[in-house]
Image (cartoon, rainbow, N blue to C red):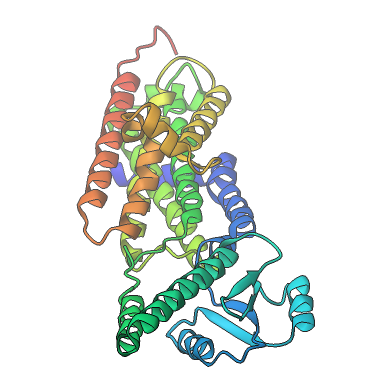
Length: 376
């Protein structure tokens, strides 16, 4: 009987128009918009790239050319240098072919057309070179024998700087919008959960009246409906992760199998939330659906779906809120999985989602079962 009910609950849910739009079409469209909006921004603004630079070397400074050769032969070169005259260098700068012009002389000087990360890096390079040159010259004036030692020490100091990544995961801060997109899909599963409450209450639907007259135990019917809804929501979450990862190319890190696990667990939170909301009050299904969608979007807004730093703001104003906001917990589970090598934080988020899901489902189950009707 239980499996029979699950079968027909699945067939019934698949005919629900809200499911097709909110759980399949809407996430696909929003994910596509996010991809167009954020694609390449992180690489352009945050990540280091070799800086195209023009050099006007009218003094034929061999020491400077030696330094340039060293920075151009590193694993990821700091500079891509073009030696040219003043007029050509200015034309290249105005055309955007180079980020700055370095002039040699008694000291290096820099000319840029705008402010930015690349220009700041060039400024630091020029200042550092001038400082080291002054140190070596002063040392040579006092003791020529020590000049070579000073140059070697300065070279060793520069070589001692080594880039050590804090994580092996995807450090693109714009990926949080996709984490929150998955959280939104999970919470939109509340529309499926609402349907369970609606068809099990005699005062809300004709199907509910017939089910309350049925000899099938109410607990069996509700349990089967919940199980079928969890299955459907899990499939929708798997579809969303697959679409984001393999169609849009979003990098969720190397532990993709656990991303799928987190997505499946988060889906149960959305279904349980909808089931609980549907069991409260006597509003019709359309009204409760509107409330459910509004609440889901509001929770996702507070988690950073629309404003990237909103979760940080909430952590400062209400430190406890992100721990009970299901959207924040869901998005954090993906973040922890991507950014941390251990599983402590990820496991904590999974347990939190399971507790939320169980608490909401039990409350909805209790409220639905306790209702009695004078007549049907």
